[in-house]
Amino acid sequence: MEVQHHNHQACYKRVMAVHDTMDVLGGKWKISILSSLGFGKKRYSEILKEVNGISGKMLSRELKDMEMNLLIKRTVLETQPVTVQYELTEYCENLMPIIFSLAEWGTAHRQRVLAKWGR
Image 1 (tube, rainbow, N blue to C red):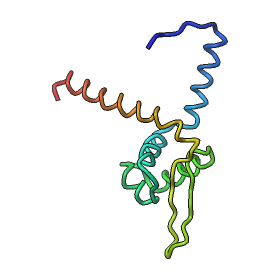
Image 2: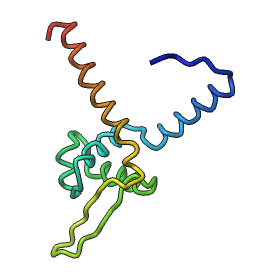
Image 3: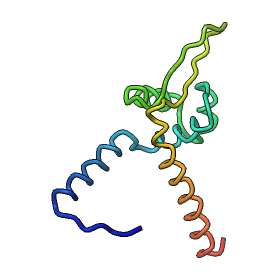
């Protein structure tokens, strides 16, 4: 990828756009939750099992925040007992190539670091 050289205004706009994105996706858990939901609709308990280390309270908070930011859809199913299901919104689907790229980079990075340190 080629580094682009722009004026200060263009640089400022890009930095602000990245800042806005990180406000929505930032934190320890959001990208992991979205990655889990990238495999399809999930119940709360399924997400809790797949996102290793997250507490129930934190998962609830993150899901509410992502719903507010239009990234996920929460559906209450009329079952006995009531079931709540989460899925990515169509709007969030635009983010998935970025999340897949992050996963690929993370896998390659882990392999590189482990190879360097002989593990």
